[in-house]
Length: 208
Image (cartoon, rainbow, N blue to C red; front, side):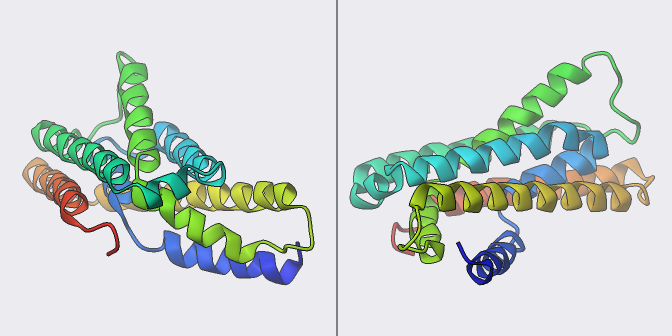
C-alpha cells in the first residue's frame, strides 16, 4: 500500500469520525455523569466494537446484510431498541460530581465497556458502510490481507483516540458545572439524544 493511499484513508476516516453518532452520545453522557475514569472502559469498548464491525464486514457479513432486507431490518431494530434502553437507563441515573468510588467501580466500568462495545459493534449501517468504504483504499496489485490489517489497525486506533478526546473534553466541561440540577439536566439531554438516535435508527430506511 502506497503512503498516498494510506494518507487518503486517514483523511477520510478522520472526516467520518468527526461526525458524532450514537456511540459518541453514549460516551459523553457517561463522562458527564461520572468523569474521565469512564474512558478506562468506554475507549477499549469502542475500539473492540469497531474492530468486530470491520472484521465482520471484511469476512463478508456486510454483503449479506446489504442483500437481505429481513436480516438488515432485524439487526437494525435490535440495535435501535438497545439505544433506547440505554437512553432510558441514563435518564433514570443520578449524575455525581465526585469520582467513581472504588467500591463497585469495577462493575460500573464493566457495564460501560459492554454498552460501548455493543452500541459500536451492533450497527448494521456501519457494517455495510465498511464494506463500501474499505475497498476504495485497497491496491489490487498488492496482497489484500496485509492492506486490510493496516487499514483496520489505523481506523481502530483513530476511533480510540477520537473517543478519548470526547471523554477528556467532556470531563473538562463537566468540571465547570457544580450545580447538581444543571448536571442532571445535561445528563437527561444526553439520554434524550440517545433515545432519539435509537428511534431514528429504527425508522430510517435501508437505502437512506
